[in-house]
Amino acid sequence: MAWLVRRIAASIAIVFAVVTITFFLIRLAHGKPFIPGGDQAVDPAVIAVLEEQYGADKPSHIQYIAFLRQLTRGNLGQSFALQRPVADALAEAIPNTLILTGAALLLDFLLGLGLGVYQALRVNRLPDVVLGNTTLFIYSFPTFWLGLILLLVFGEWLHWFPIGGKTDPVLCPAVDSFRCTLDLMHHLVLPALTLGVVGAAGTARFQRAAMLEVARQDFIRTARAKGAPERRVVLRHQLRNALLTFITRFGLAFPFLLTGAVLTETIFAWPGMGRIATEAILRRDYPVVTAVALVASAMVVAGNLVADLLLAAADPRLRSASADVT
Image (cartoon, rainbow, N blue to C red; front, side):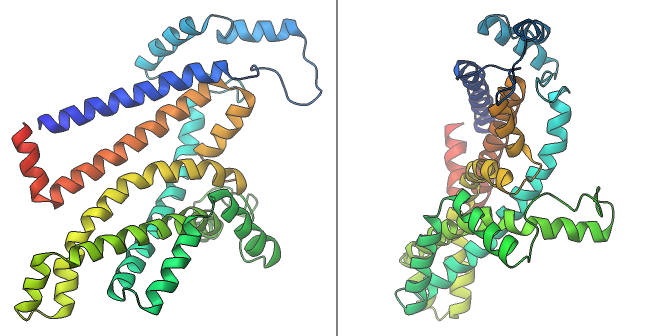
């Protein structure tokens, strides 16, 4: 229990540090809010009124203190560009990001686990060599580049999937029917593939290495010497112990998916948190950028905390170690 309390306290400290750094860095970046892009001119008097209205004319440390006071009340502020509460904008965007990252995570782990186990069982044979080089090639791909290729090939050339958006805005303005659910899944394919396939390539390589490491352990040789069927040795002994690496990979996948979602949502016009963050950075919408950093960092540390708890539940040695520390 003491270990869990320390981990939660450390997680809160990490989120606080990320939000603080983001708060000041975005204000040090080039550009100012309330100034539209292009050649459109704005009366400086109008900008001064807007800065005073939103408190952007005050020194950064004064703005930071005001931000912390509002945050303790659950208020994330008012968006400069969207002219609405930041919490309302995020409430609409976060479920869409969770849908995308959830689908990508499922594809990542199912495909990656299957490929890793398959390669380990055929180590140094032709399928292992071919899949090993293929996964290395895919894992080396930048996420945004893969997204552009999928968009070009399957969206523009073949017209198999929509090129952007969450649903058809005319036929399915809201996901309130089975038809619109299928439409959502149709729009989800390319963005989820963009995030999930790259992650699956990395997971496959990790899982293959974990399976081969466990295969050299004494208890595996003992199980075979006792005459246990090979299927039972692989599934019950080898795979079960190799899944500890798989659980660790679960915690590492969250930062990858969230950072990849920023570019993926922009490429496919997916109305999620990453797209809102990109637009907010370009517009210098300070409250939205800070709130996105808060939510994203909280999701990352929560994912890592869940992975640690699952790892402790799966590995009795870790439970014993944490009990000794306590």
